[in-house]
Image (cartoon, rainbow, N blue to C red; front, side):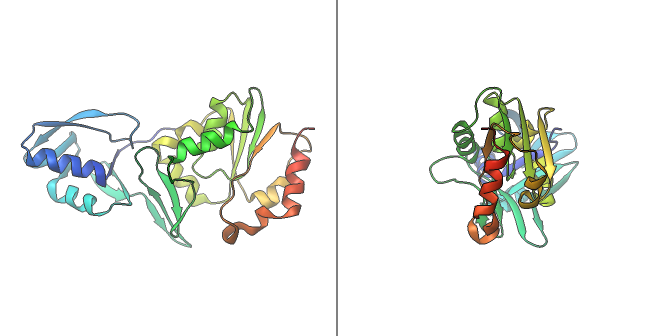
Length: 232
């Protein structure tokens, strides 16, 4: 699995607009949400990304006004990484990895730390080399990816929302979960956990949404199931 397209958020759009105002012929920017940077040409008030993809000054100004959204330009089509349906799902830019927001509720700890590092620190508290790991609320996959980096032998990552799973396919920072050693399960962990074998995991990463959204994942019965699937 790999992402395609160019990812642009307000901070990048502002940098490009400023460079245009200064009359610069090129600019070095990140188009994969802060994972890397590349030099692109500026010509005739346009950012030239490749032969088929370019952004005009007016498009960059539009992006610059949307501070909490991420835009993706692919095959000449510019769209926001968001889905509206039973809720409003979107990827929100940070200075590093994006965070997931559902109907205005942030699904990551983001104050004073970027979401990817927050997930890594959480995983590091329980995951050891060679562990079989259960990730109960997969989200964007940051914790599962971190567990593998920490030396986990295999990770089972469960996610309820098909919308979240679709968004993470397009998130450059989520690509580490598309790995043979990570089993991605689309299910409600509150019921799926009953199908998991007793003492089948060495560690469990459990970072549920807030109580008002998933109160059952805070209950005694669910924690009894976590205890059951953990090796003694």
